Image (tube, rainbow, N blue to C red; front, side, top):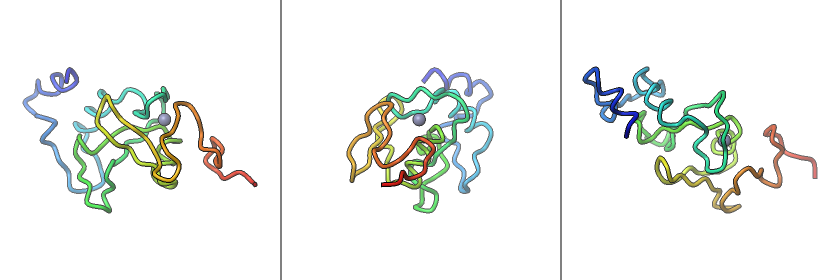
Length: 122
Ligand SMILES: [Zn+2]
């Protein structure tokens, strides 16, 4: 919880910051960026152009709160949003899998998808 201590210096406990909308308040964004320096999917070390994901989507009642947010690379965000993958666990012990395809192996793309996110021709 080293990242929290830096944010507590101004008296704000980032763990209590919750926002009802989809937008992410700047203090919360900073905390997520400090916690998730790379994509949180095990084996993925992408550290640029990361996107903040609501683990439980806002449309399903997921709060904009630190324990419901994680940073993903574009590829893993795409898989989670459009291909049925789930991010499970907690910081430091995430799992990324698809109930239909099983756990994703580190650095391996699903067989039916190219890295660009488009389906391959059969
Ligand atoms: Zn990734």
